[in-house]
Length: 602
Image 1 (cartoon, rainbow, N blue to C red):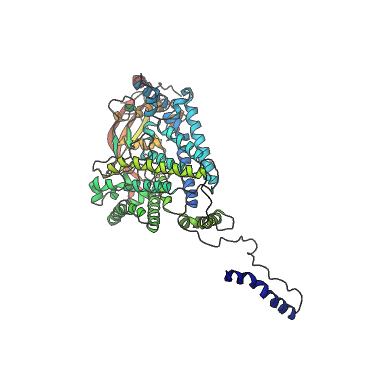
Image 2 (spheres, one colour):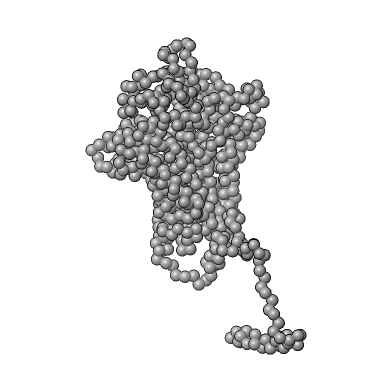
């Protein structure tokens, strides 16, 4: 008490001598010194660095990154869905849904819905193209809003998830890639990263839940430690619906455990000798990386094993090691982006890696001006550090209970995933629940040692067997064809038909009957099908009378060799016919058996 009393009377005691001293030095009231000001034109900066342990800025970066992936995915859907699953698509989604109804005939509508959960069940299928376009455009609009404003709530993120979930479940083989599941799981977690209603970059009463942050970290751990070999998932024998949709189970993050259990080339450190040339859609950089010396390819393989089998465990070893994990994984994904056209997969894999960083680690991404986002976060951290915290609001309490429920749900759904991960016969890119919110991932457990391509050709000759017939080649958007065409660079965009043509090349046409639907549309010069093609040799002419598929073995030319000097990126050797020459008349019964409309000449 005496100390407080002393402090309270000290200023008046000291004021009098100071005042008399000023008078003796020249009298009057001396001007007070002005406080220091920031230089004109330069806003004052945030005085202190951010504290670790909060995730306000992490949420902003993570949501914008996730919304960007959604934007790309919906852009791909808008540009290609009508041609692939539209009313006159290669595998019409309306026909797919009708087949599901037929299979579950006599049962409740819930059985059909649970087999393929999509909002399209509740819409008028007579306007399927309009429905597909509307879903894609709405997804584009919402995702663009989040990217531009950095603002999102649970409603907007749930809309994005439901829209893409609906497309993926009618997409059949065109949406059977591993990254579709991964986007759905990442998007589901993104819903719980946001407040329910508030649209603010910094919703003061809704900090990012540590449970959701750890959900993202658990996701990146599973992705990188990841699953089994590249394989075809056979449809259920009892289900006639699935016979129209052979699901190719694949992904492309080069995940870890399967490489030890799978192809021996991963153990012999030789897989990278083939990967750049035989990956689905190589890019120009892969052309040069393929010619790297043997020791560099071995170093790549060893580094791959370390990043996928060792580094994932860093996420559980404290803040500093978790940040190192995030840095390594992001750099790894950037390298994969540079060296191949793996759709938006590697971009998507960066998203959960962002959860390894807190505000202190990501502060450098934001300006330090006073009143900016970084400054606001710093002030919120200081308020949070005070002992006299305000009472917990009812809404915040409900939110905590929801987050706890989410954590319990993820933990429960992770049990079969962990059991699969520990199983020597594990499966990859598989979901053990209909919502696809906790899945297994993985790819390239086995590496294709030779690249083969299906080249589609057409002729106007009256007879397909005429030795004088001139067969002209169609060029796809990105897959290899013309030997002199430079490999494309399109990541994160994705040409779904080009990828399925890569799968078809190491299978048979009997396993890919959709390829005859494509041939029929090319015979009719169908404008929708031709929009998926880069070069139509019959443009401005009558459509071809015959279409055939030829099988070729492709190899990169040597950058210093004679073929490269001639401008050739590829060299090829014919293997034989892939599918025989067909015409519209010969395809009529085939189309009728599958309820496909017979194409008419355009």
